[in-house]
Length: 56
Image 1: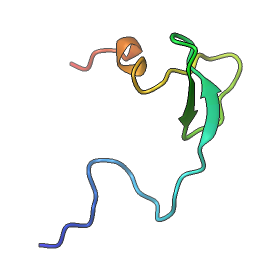
Image 2: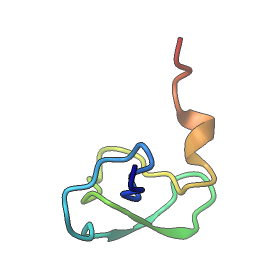
Image 3: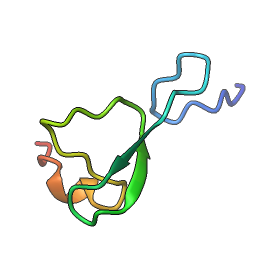
Image 4: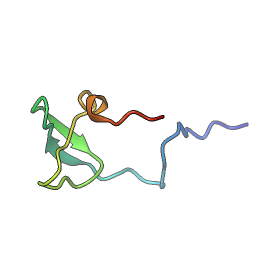
């Protein structure tokens, strides 16, 4: 079996376009794979797990 590099994330062939944002918690600049909207907070990789709803 060949390792395709797939690690549970979706891959659509090319690199994702990243957008700069400011984390709503720590105020650090970060990059996200979507265009941030002003009406929703954006969190960096460090702060995001604190705001994620628990999975059951």
